[in-house]
Structure formats: C-alpha cells, structure tokens
Length: 361
Image (cartoon, rainbow, N blue to C red; front, side, top):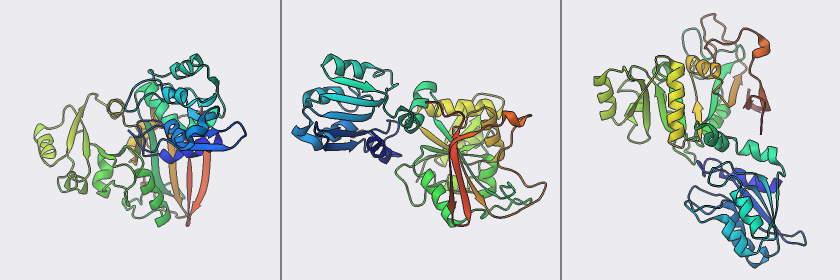
C-alpha cells in the first residue's frame, strides 16, 4: 500500500478534480504483477492501468488500491466491473471514496461479486494525500494554500515597499513549482499594483492556473502584466457588485473575466469566491498575498496549507508589513498550529511547510 500511495502522488497536478490514486497487484506467491496510477484527468483509473500490466496474472491476485474503486459511469467505465472481470480475489483499500456516486458502493459491488475486501490500511496516509479532493466534496470549497517569503524578522518588504528579492533563486524555483500544480493563484489589488506580477509558473507546470486579483472596484491597470497577458493565460478580477461599470467593461474588453461578488466586506467576498471556485471544480488554490488577504483568510480559518520561505535577512522598520494581517488572536493559546511540518534548507533560505489544524483523517 505504501508503494501504491507513492504511485498515486505522481498524479499531483495532473488528475484534478479527480483524486490521486495508485494501485499495486500482487500474485498469491507475493510477486508484484501489476502497478498503475491515475495519470491524467479523463485517462483510465489506476486500477485499470494496473490490470492492463498484470494481464492474466491478475486472476486470483490481491489488489492494493489507495481509494475505493468506482462503481459508476463517469469519463471512464466502472473500475469494479474491470476488477470482477479480471478475476481479482481480494481487494485492500486504504480510504473509502466520499464521492456520493461511490461512497461504499464500490465496496458493496465487489463483495456481492464474492471478492474479499479490506478497508483502512494506511488510511491516515491516504487521507492526507486525498485531503484537497475530500474537502472539495465535503464543503464545495477548494484546498487553500498560503505562500509567502519573508525576512528573518518577519517582513514582506522594506518600510519603503521594496520586496525584490527577499528569497533566493532556489526558493523562487520551488514557488514556481507550486504555482504549476494549482488551479488558481490569488493576490490582492495592492500586491498586483505594487509588484505587477505575472502569476505564471516558470517553467510551466502540469496546470495553467487561473490568475485572480481581488479588486473590489475593478481598477486593475490595463497596462499591468496580468491584463496584457490575459489572452495567453486566464485572468479573473474578483470585484464587488458596486464596481464601476465602465471599468468592468474595459477589463472585459481586454480579455479578463470580471466576477461580481456579493458582500460588503473582504471576508464575505472571499468566501463567495471560494464557493464559486469550488463550483468550477477548482481543487487547489494558492494565495500569495498580501497581508490583508491572508489575514482575512486566516481569521476565517479558511487556510489549509502553508508554505513559508524565510531568508536570513533583517529588514527592520516599524512600518514594514508582516505577512498576515487581519484581526489575529488575543491569546497565544488560540494561535493556529501546523501539522505534518517539514523544514528544508533551500540555498541560504529555509522552507517551512505544513497543514493547518489537527491533521484529521
């Protein structure tokens, strides 16, 4: 099962909004006769890939699969039918599939066909791998990843607003890798104005993320890099319903999508945006700032994963902003904690990443 989980992870950025799934088929004598993983959205599922490798050796074998096999017709036929036809004797499943059209139905179909089924092996590991998929199904909202680079004293920029570059080349390369596997990248209007970013992955990754600017008045400059490249990579301006109609028309004519969001506060508009992104089946959303946007998301407990790049530099300055604004907390006991924390040197920088909260399965 550990091998199946490692195979599943190869699909990151390629299979969404489908889940990452891996599969290993083992003959009665313990020999691995087939392996597979879900390689891309719309492509055969992991079980079918592994069965094709195993061929006739699948008969009487045990299949280890990270997620319950599907039992419905989607973009591909039911995997349960393929398992039954191949003569699989036993199926070991790490995690039950929460998708409503499966959710135990795959297990029942296999058992009704006389196949022995075991569920729960390495379920915590599978749960972590499937977390974005599970959140989208359970809440209708995407997995939210917060990312920032800061100095050792916790500054996003100098007091004068200069931020290029805080982190080194190795950190920026990892940042681009993260961009290349997500469905959307979000920044606030202030960040878009101050940094004039492209918000693209360089070099390109497996996905082309939707570039989103939170701009209540829809005043994003028509000369910005984002607007000028809207024809090459999609740009969405998340505005309020009170945005000026003429400005909305100009941005639309320049190739941007302008999405009017209900709500009088940034927090309510952010929640409406996440719901809309979930409706569009966006699985992973990267938020790159600024402090007001990140603060609002952390206040709402809407962030699921954090990536921070810390450079060994001291900026100082009482007016220099820190990464997370918002209301914050009154007592340190209420501070959000990270689980599954990893700390890694990147050149002179330190990369700290983890998931927010208790790490529930």
